[in-house]
Image: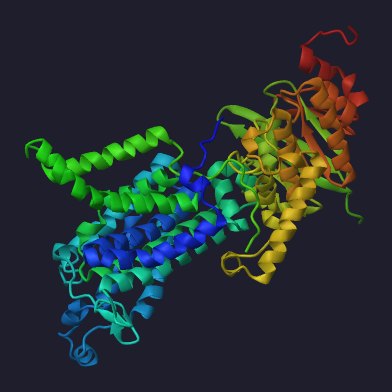
Length: 370
Length: 261
């Protein structure tokens, strides 16, 4: 069988061009900033999605467990951050004098405390979800995980009664931004006469997180654990007969994947300042799976490419949809046109490159473990 | 009391599928360094027996010992850890992984560095990873397919896939290597090469349990042979004895078949 080659832009990429790529990533928001914060905001969201896709890739790409409820971990991280760093819990607890005196200044747990908590919570929930689904494969697993994702969303939507914890469909607002050394990232920062917008500061923090996530995935993949996951994906019985404890390895994949989801959820909440259950529907889960598959299942650079493309494309198409709408004499709604274009793009990509845009190369030469 | 010199001992293994008694009180004992054959006509229960001792099916009855230690074939991975490595009748490789990686997966139970070590690339991780690679490469050279190390497993020829499966099984450092019809689908040249490989593996001190359809191969290779028929063990002994056993001939050719034809 002929395996598709890497795209031309990858083939041409040499070691040195990684340096240029790095530089370009550092300068990119500075170029976009003058055109408006909306552009940098698109990049920020793209990177949050990249982290999500990388996390899901551990579960779906490496271990081969199709998870259609992945957005639940994203939601858990987001709500944990929102509850611990917004007025919501304070309002709830102010009825109790003891708590009211403790929280007189409001609930403002610092982000560097919430992030590890979000990671741990998501990891734990990952195990909880994984445990009952261990014997399921393929379609059956997909349906159970889909149900799990919906359960979490329905809970968030309805936990405003009997006591108001999540504020229901109205969502949670006034969420604290991330603060570094007393400076909230939502505020402008002057660096040597150059103005950095809030979104640009988030960009750099997110860039660090994405680089760390890529490193995490890459190092896991090129270890005995990553190989064991792929072995389970390829043939579970053969993997077991090699002595692999598939139960523990699957749970590990679920929890590590969920960890990335939880952390990016916390980021999302801090970045947006407002969250509601609407952001965590089935559509989101499907979109993240699409990023992983379209980019190249199990291949980290491909997954990053897929996530960047599928998260920025809908935004860019906003600008293309309006002229197209004018062509039809305004008869078709721009939003519908945009959806149509996204769908067509995805279909075209999967027809042309069924293995994804950037699949793992045919001959994987052993890399020096670094 | 001196311990029995058996590396693998099965006493009274029984397995029932609904109304079919697939195995009825089957005993089998493999000595250290022995090549042991298990033959029988189609449907005799060979593969069932194989799946029972390797934990793929749960036995209804039976006692199982490896190196005089009782083991419970209740989970496939535990059997592998106890010291039995197996290959499959219909080859089961990790197709999308490289040839080398397939063998590296086999090293998994011999190695221990966890997630944290892998993430920080600890000293122990680097040492272990280098060891895994070196051993895997040695095993590929041992079975003679080292030049395909970086190819994906699915691109190998049929005979080489069999060799890779054996190398992968050896990577778990088993006491007993269980081969399920390794010569199936092989031509005469490949069979000869396989025979040499199996004899070479015996010299490593690994005992071999061989299920095979090809009676000629079994007779030329095995020290002792057991014959299964309809779930019953009908004959145990050296190949020459088994070959002339009346019950064995009947099982293969039917009642009233001439001994010398």
